[in-house]
Length: 154
Image (cartoon, rainbow, N blue to C red):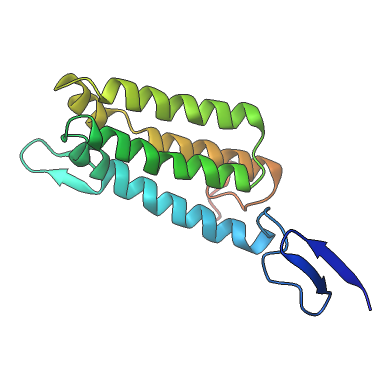
């Protein structure tokens, strides 16, 4: 009988727990990306401001609470980076995503100007777009938009 050594002890191949790897399985990538896109939408553009037709998200609303609000939204935004790392994204892309979150967190902490900035700079949507583009290019995810030219067939 084949045994596998893990941090929690020894398991036979038939008893191996379902969390064998920290890396995501191929069928899990689509679901993870869909979940991250929903989270980014909620954080950055879930609501429409009446009268000015500007979309804002929970990030801008929670950011109205001084100091603590921006810390909370930065922590939530870091979850997208954690998931990207779990999906095997290269370090340079993780650094770029972290820079977006850090920039959003630092400027968002400035009173009044930071609140307006939070409504305009959508770091989470940018990060999910970067993640999707990378996963499409690497072949992990099917493209959401097909490049090419359409020809009318009459």
